[in-house]
Length: 106
Image (cartoon, rainbow, N blue to C red; front, side, top):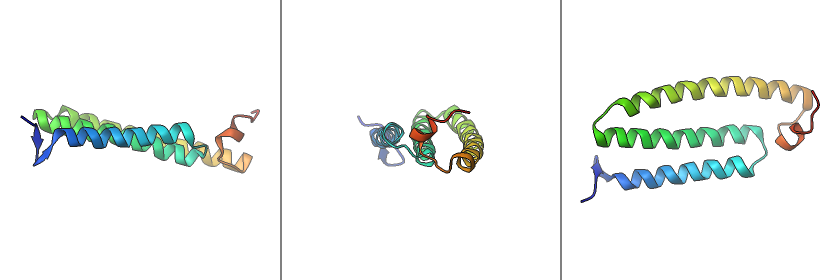
């Protein structure tokens, strides 16, 4: 018997979430632009959010959706602080390339 949420099997949510998380993880490992790294981290967080909501809906428990709310709040704060730091670094180094930023002496 296949578990179904709103007509869509639960396994489809797992596959999509795993694909999104894999794309995000690959982007973090491969890309060097700091803005793209932030976007890949956000993609990974959204993959986890999708999985939490899917399992929460399947089990009939709202605790997964509460976790998603807190993850989104933390992610918004992380982006705000991260972009502020990135703007300061760009003003000083004129680049967002992480390879160049690793060589800076502050």
